[in-house]
Image 1 (tube, rainbow, N blue to C red):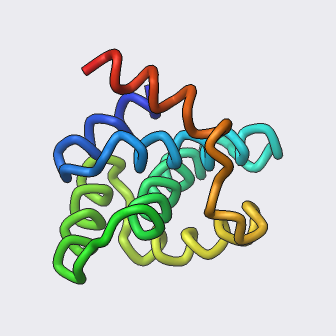
Image 2: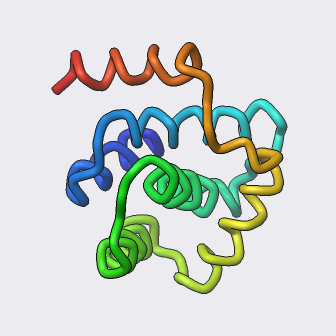
Length: 115
């Protein structure tokens, strides 16, 4: 359900399917590392979307602000917590935000077939 929320929010903000796919991969990597718990899972999802949008889209400052506003509204957390958690996720991902095509492609295919 969190992935569905991530996808819906990304569509509202006109993010590309490849961006959503990258956010999914980041999120799954955090799950596999055992970094998620009930308290931080929404922050993790939000930080993954934000990082993917920053790395794969050519966002302007107001677009980033709009995305943060939407994340805050959708996942019901504080933007200060999100910004702080963004760095935590970045460290957990070992700064590896550029992903190999074979990790992103399965999600991308599924997303484009669904829409």
